[in-house]
Length: 343
Image (tube, rainbow, N blue to C red):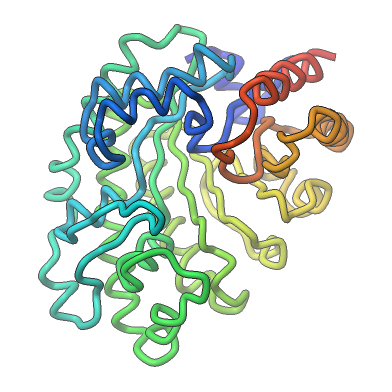
């Protein structure tokens, strides 16, 4: 991994700010769709190290970002815990038997045993590591325990989270048991990613905003911090990125031993800088839909550069890239960020 990238993640002085795209960076590429067609379906693609390696490297080769983000999916974790997972066209991921009772969670595998089952992820990392240029980094990732638990309890994506939030208020002990079991799996899963060759790990809490502020630490953030503490105690040289989506109201309560805070597009970068900029490198936070317009992209990149001129920042989107974004516009975003960072 390049010294520039390490310095940026640890907040050291560097004349150049790296840029990479948020997870799902390749899904707007025609080349990605060709590889996915070979795999037959999304889960097959995740399970095929050679094809997963190919799509991991595509944004590096085609768009020119400064780091590769491992191609996988956060739901491989509960899948390997024993929950049958299908990706259904038009519906997305679906578990056939969501968690309802304590017996359901007791029946699932946990800890190191699950981490050992995710061999296809580690094989993908090793293949990417062997092909990735020395000046490019490889970022591994996982879903946060709360985000994983929402899928495990709801059985699929949701807009209301009413089933898991009902559990939060009516049976918090059961929810904590689920979160604790998932946390133990994720600790060892990230460790295995590191041992396989990733340079950085990122924890995504995509559904952070579903929790009211007074409950967020109890049911999400503290579990993320447990994971970061575990990793930092054993691998202090590995940068950790925390990305909780949609929590501008929670910024005063952020704490923990990690290096980079991912700022989503709904959180003003100036606010994140005020609250967190002294303690953490900030990553983000362009609204992904700006990529439909080069003019809108340029305005945001220039604004971010001005806001973070005397701060510590990694250019990125404020959430996942959308599948119909023009490839030329993604290339423009990356090139513009790289040019601006050299000023």
